[in-house]
Image (tube, rainbow, N blue to C red; front, side, top):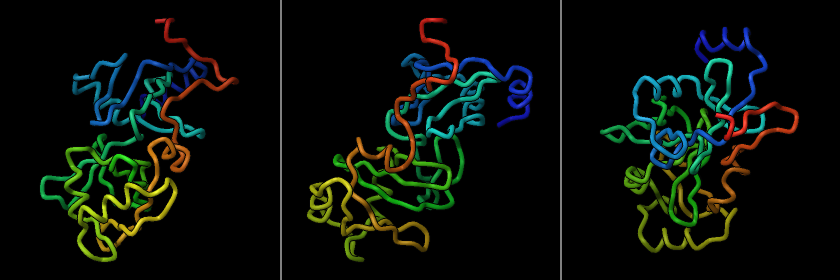
Amino acid sequence: MEGWVNRALARWPNVPALFGWLGLDRRGRWLIRGEPITRPQIIETINRNYAADAEGRWFFQNGPQRGYVALAYAPFVLTASADGELLYTHTGELVADITQAIIDEEGSIVLMTALGAGLLRDADLDWALSRLRCNSQAIDETALAKALAQCSGTATDLSLQFGNHALPMLRLNRADVPASLGFVREPRASFDAPTLAKTSH
């Protein structure tokens, strides 16, 4: 968090949290009431003050107030660099380490990073396909179809090459991803925390 945020929290520690206004779509765009935020200054401020609470609910800390974020899929959206050598989050942070690779029933790729769970942007699926292996061989349509047809929670024959590591790929349904990776897609207020209702603004 930035210094001004910490100072505001110290001065006004009990400002009610805001739910139902902010979102993150599958392309890594911040949304307010369903509409993309386009002002660069606002986007950069959200990027720098984005975090999760102990319950796995992600939020933007706007001074003394938390605005909880509804996630279209995961807390981060990942994109490959132009040369394909690096991965970045939608907030501009370098992905240095991946601990788990997941493929869902629709072929979306989810990676567990040191920063949190990230959905690989649809436009970068070719990045993953070029790094997927099946029993150490280049992947083909048959191997991919077999993995997609597996039950949620089962290990596949696929692995993802990232740096010097070959990460085994787990088949997991989209609905099962949040509980497995420890985040909340649709944050709700805790009973013991004061909140601002969506209709109060």
